[in-house]
Amino acid sequence: MSTTPPPAAPAAVASSPPVSPPPKRQKTQPSSPSQPPPRQSASIAGVIETSVLPGPVPAPAMPASELPPLQVKKLAPAAKLPARGSAFAAGYDLFASRDANVPAKGKALVDTDISMSCPAGTSPRSGLASKHFIDTGAGVIDCDYRGPVKVLLFNHSENDFAVREGDRIAQLVLERIVNPEVVEVEELEESVRGAGGFGSTGTN
Image 1: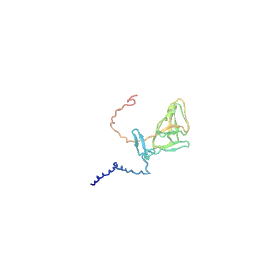
Image 2 (image 1 turned 180 degrees about the horizontal axis):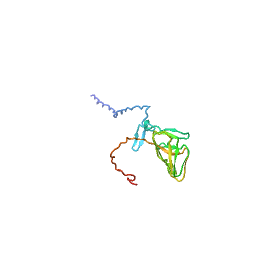
Image 3 (image 1 turned 60 degrees about the vertical axis):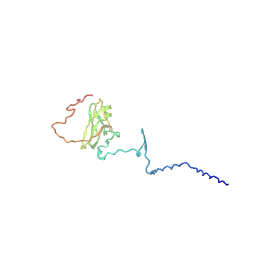
Image 4 (image 1 turned 90 degrees about the vertical axis):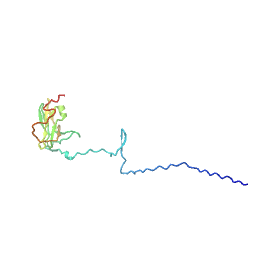
């Protein structure tokens, strides 16, 4: 009696570990060669991305209508044009066009030999006033005056003061002129000060 061998066991199938799907690719925008990446500036909070272009930002230009020219005419070869001592100087230096002498405790008119067309006034030069006790008689030059400009100097010292050709003797300060209409009224508007004169608001 023949015997049949038992059926062979099925072969084991090797299983591989699960494979994770590949990560999705993110689309990147190509950088344009004509546009550089934004500059970065450090701050207390961290790094802040900015789009500031290199170089200083220019200040807005003032309209030319607000800067009328100061028209100056020389009346003598020794005359000098008014000039500012620095970029932020409030006034223009005026120069003597010839020698002059300001007597002690006296006054003298010093020539500049220039004429101009612009509303302006004069103010003392602090250097002369503090060192030599020289002061200027401040005045207003009307815009329609075309004659020579002279500077009135007062000498408060005990010694004569010599002015030489080319010396800076005063400062010319440009002012805006306002001419409101004159109106006669019965009463004026009330104010806190009222009719109080000099010293009414205190002495210190």
